[in-house]
Each structure stands twice: as structure tokens, then as C-alpha cells.
Image (cartoon, rainbow, N blue to C red; front, top):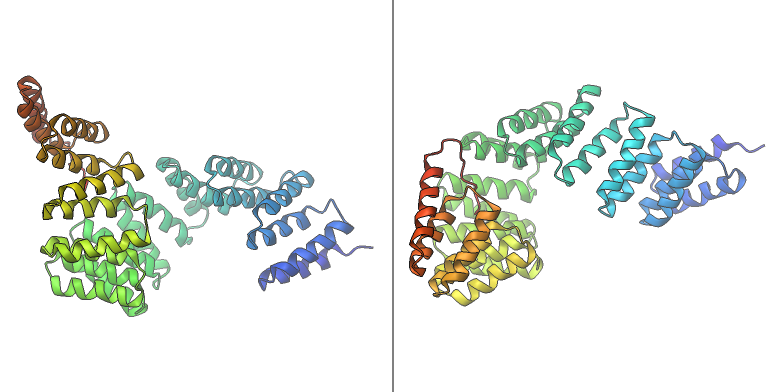
Length: 385
């Protein structure tokens, strides 16, 4: 008589100890003895996934479902496997099946929220995180996830409330403190931002993110020496931290040290060759230094990486006009407007360029649109750069 429970417990013990090879061997043995044991297939899939054998994990999860079509955990695990391959629609479909099997499955709802978030279905993501919180009011991760969606969609007050809840539930959560500090900066409450970053650094003195964020808060407060000291400290902690280099480049550009800014952006791009923002910011520095040909190259690179990067189109338009390429400049400003229809500077500069081309009516139309947008209290100018 096969004692399935004993073998499963042995395999689970290997999983808990992260001895995944032994777990695979144990669950394989059980599958050979009892091929229809869905738990054996499912847990072998978990072990294979942990070992990076994604194809094997998929096969095992599928077999687990064959022998137990109501196994919500297997569908959730399959969804996670799809996420590793960025197959978010397939992952959402798996989470849907899991929730059909178990409407109150916390992980299924949470993971479906993550997948919705990755596909920019933010309203659906919020609904999922709401469901998790309704089912478990103490799940700080759901508040954290919901806060992030509020943050990236510009609802800073709600983001602040959620990050505050995370800190209440988990006071030593460095990430929540840093994100809440970032929200305080966006709400122009710099003192509270500084308090959060100070607290994060007290809890984790080697945390680069906390030093970077505190440096940005100090920069916003006009404390240039303090800002540079914090950014330098982040780089000392981790010399390969491209985010710290990137923001130090912004710092140097703002204080007018263009050579140092150029060096920092160039170093970022040595590490991360597909960073559109770094190319764009380096293009700005080249523009300010009068290196127009180099600026165009950087804006070209930014646009090749991200065709929807509006400020790169806008900045390239400015340089093209300076070079006398008026029609190309108009085309770039037009593309900026296509991407961000409410961006006033694009209308203004296209109008100026139309005048240079002798297109007086088109220039007049753009100026009228610019005034309309300026007079509209509903319009918030997008922070393109």
C-alpha cells in the first residue's frame, strides 16, 4: 500500500528547505507509483519552477489540472509561470480559472491584480487589490500594490493613505517609507518626505534607495550639498547603481555642472544601453553645451527605444529648428502633440516654426490653441521632463 501522504510530506519538507533537486526526485517517485496523484504533479512543478525549468513546470501543472480540474493552486502556479515569460493575458486567464475554482483565493486575486497592472489595466488592478483587502484587511502587500497603482496614475492622496497603512501594519517596511516619501515630495510636503527617508536610513543604513530619495528631497529643498552627499553615498554603497548615477546626473545638470552631468549619463548608458530617459537627458546636456549633432544622436536613440517618448520628439524638434531644418522640426512638434495633445510648449514652438516657414495661418491656429489651453483650468501640463 502506497503511503502518498508520507511521500508528499517528505517532498514538501525538501521544498521548505529549498532542496529542489531532492523534491523533484521525491515527487517523481510518487508519480511513478501513483500517476494520478495531482498533488505530486503540482509540487514537482513547484520544484521545477524554482530550479528554472519552466517548460517542465508547465507540463506538471497541466497534469495536475488533468487529475484535479478544480485545483486553484495549480492554475495560480501556471499563471506565475506565464508571467515569467511576460505572457500576461495567458496569466490572467489562469487566474480567472483559479478564481472560478475558489472565489476567495487571495493569491489568485492578488496576482491577477499584478497582471492587470503590468498590462496597464489599472482600474481592474485596483478592483483586485480591493478584493484582497476585503478578504484580509491585514494584507500589507495588497495595500502596497494598490498604493503603487494610485501613484503611477497620479492619485497621490490615495497613494499616501495606502502607504501609511502599510507603515502601520509593517513599520520596518523600507520600501513603503521610501515610496511614501516620494509621494510627500509630489505633494510638496518636503519635511515629511525627509522624515520618512531619515527613518528608512536609520532602519537600513546600507539602503541605496533611501539615500537616493533623500538626496532628491534635499535637492527639491535647495540643499545642494546635502543632496550631492546622499547621492554620492548611494554610489559608494553600490558603485553599479545606475539609478544613483542617473539622478546625480540630473543634480549636476540643475546646478550647471554639465561636464559631470554628461559623465554620469554616459556611465549609466555603459551599464544600461536601452535607457531612453538617460539618452534624452544626455541629449539635453549636449544641447545646453552646444553639441547639436550629439544631441540629435541621443534623441534618435531615445526615440528608437521608445517611440512614444514625447519629450524626446519635442527636444529633437527644438534642435532641428536651431539647425534650420524647419519642416522636420514641425514634424517632431506634431508628433509630440499627437502623443500629448495638451502640451502647450509644443503648440508654441510649432507656431514659431510655422512662422519661419511662412505658414502664417497655421501659426495663428497653434497660438489660438495655446491660449485656449492656457485659459483652461482643467488642463494640467504633463511633466514630460
